[in-house]
Length: 397
Image (tube, rainbow, N blue to C red):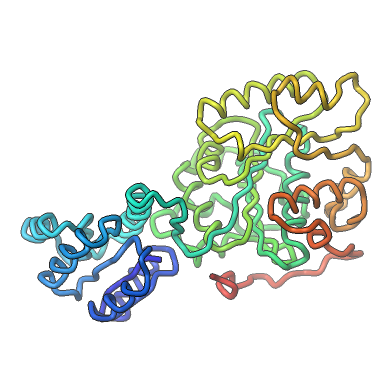
C-alpha cells in the first residue's frame, strides 16, 4: 500500500482520501525508514507538503539506487521551476500540487504500473488483497445473462460468507434492479459529478443493498443517461469495488461498447454466454474472434451454455466444435427460472436444490475455489429487509 509522509494529520488524511486506498500514514522520514525496512514491496511514497524539500530529495536519491521500482511522489503547496529542478535531479517520479487531489490519485495509479513493469511482479495491489471481478457477457440479448449474473452473485456470496457487489453495466436497458425487485435511490449515473474525487466512501452511497452482503450498483433509469457516463469512470468504479469486495460481478450490454471494453480491462474471469441456436453461435464466434484481437487471455474465458438440454437440433458437442472452445458450465432449461425471476426471488435463493441452482453454484465454486455446498444459500420464504445503508468499510482489508 502507498505510504504518506506528513506531520499534519488533517493534510495526511486528505491525501489518503485522494489516493482512494488504504494508505499507510507516517509523520516523518524516520518512521518511513523503519516501515520500509520491513516491507520490500512498497510501490509509492507520497511526501506531503510538510516534508522538507532537501530531506525529500535526499531520500529520493537514495531510493532511486536501492529501490528503483518504488516511486517517490512529492506534494507541494506551490510547484515552481526550482521545485521541479530539484525533483528531477533527485529522481522523484512526480510532483503534484496539494490542491490537485485528482492528480495525486492518478500519480499513485501510475506508480503501481511502474512498480509492476520494473519489478516483474504481477501481484501489485492498489489496496492490499483485492477481490476478483467476473464479467458476464454475450454479444446477443435474451440468452440469460442477467439471470446468470444475479444468481451467480448470490452463489458467490455463500449466504453472507463473502462480500459481493453486482454491477449492472447495461446502461441503457439494465434489468438487475427489476430482477431483484430493488428500488434504488442512486444509480451509476450519480457517480458522474463525483468522478474527480470518487473514493469508496462516496461510492458506497450509490450502492443498493439486497441481503447477505450482496450489494448492487444499478444502471440508470433513463436510457440516454449512458451517454454522460465516461468509460474512464466505469474503470475507476470497478477498481474501487475490487479493492473493497471479495467478488464483483458485472452484467453487461450485448455489444463491445466503450463501457464494456472498460470492464474487460478490469476483468479477471469472463463468462461468455451462449445458447443452442445458430444466430447466437454466430455472434459468439465473432465475439471470440474480437476478444482475440483485444488480446484477452483465452485461459480467462469460460464458455457457459444456457438452456443446454433443449432439443433443437444442435448439441453441446456441435457448440464446442463451432466455437473451438470447451463448455465450462451447462445450465439446464426450466420454467421455474422465469417464475422465480418474475417474483423477484432468484431461483438459487428459493430453490437451492434445483438443477439450475446446482449448476450455477458449481460454476461459482469453480470460480471461487470453494466447495459447491458452501455456495448455496438456504431457501427463504420472504425477503429480509437489509439496513438502508451499510458501512462497507467495516470489513475492509
